[in-house]
Length: 242
View (spheres, rainbow, N blue to C red):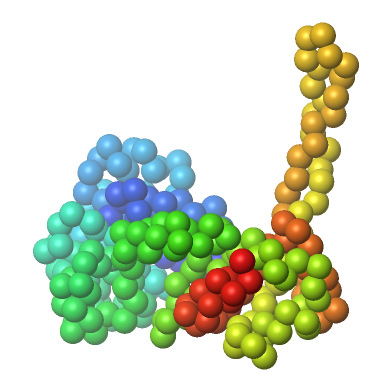
């Protein structure tokens, strides 16, 4: 078994497919389960064990040693009844960690009452992310966490540029923590020659993590900050320093 763990993903729509593929790319052993042959054919070269079966068939799941997975993700999107029955079977088999998809508040309530503590709501998360980006153009990435916390990657707001991390007062003024800093660096691109023009070198840039920044590190233009804290406090920090 891979040191990264062994997982099963049940339901290979766009969401489940992406989870299974990414886990495999990260070095995990993945059983990818769906009842559609065309989907299994599509994913067979991208995961460790592609399996076509009905996830509501308890014996079929047992045949895949599902009860000994490190975690099972139930990503069935359109058939909530199948998702519920599959989740119930996994509970009966004492799967140590069950993560279920939930579309909408009603589904969340039902799964919560069943005792499922880890719920995935891709539509909600995408919608929230889009709305946050529209309101805060500085926002590049956000990762929602329990209890109204999140980790965000933002472009350095104008008012903190050329100030030190200590002077910025992230923790003292805003009760936020700076996880790390990403700094824009120029990289050499391939040389391109245009007709009638001299050969010019294309300049490209990329953002690289600079590790754990010191308190006297100066924030530069186009720096990106990875910040952890309460959602409202992050929004306040961005608004004040625009």
